[in-house]
Image 1: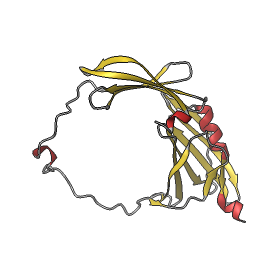
Image 2 (image 1 turned 30 degrees about the vertical axis):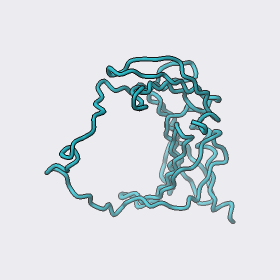
Image 3 (image 1 turned 60 degrees about the vertical axis):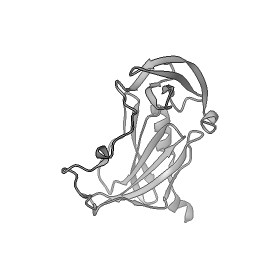
Image 4 (image 1 turned 180 degrees about the horizontal axis):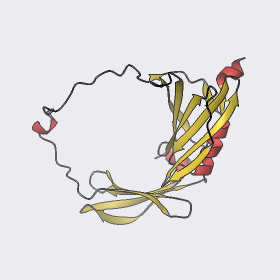
Length: 205
């Protein structure tokens, strides 16, 4: 909560009843236009979020998550045993590997930090795709970077509910790249992030 207070105004705004349980309503109102607001209905007994509303800057509902039933009793030993259908995990030969990123953003909304950087070879094209994940402690978005290698690609800009997806072509010292930003952030913010991506390889030269 202390970190979130830098980017959101936090306030207890009332009480509610969700899934037959008493809840306290906490509002998280963003201090800038680069993230959405939240209304959390927290279970009075356990602190679990029983309902979460994602709101845009006009207070319009973008997404609702809500329990209709909740059993907080302790699971029995039998509940924790694997069933006969449980299979062993098979290692994926194309698994992602954590890497020291060779990309950075020249601009990020205040409070967002890089939390993971992964490189994966596409099983079909064998092209390495870099993915970076950022969050502010509550909201998050991902950036995917893929070399075009002469392929044709068009810029796209779309929003489905709270999720924005923006793809932009970037000309870099390594050639044409397609940058895609996906996350529950305003679409204008996603577009600005996509256009701000830079290669650290160029900076080192």
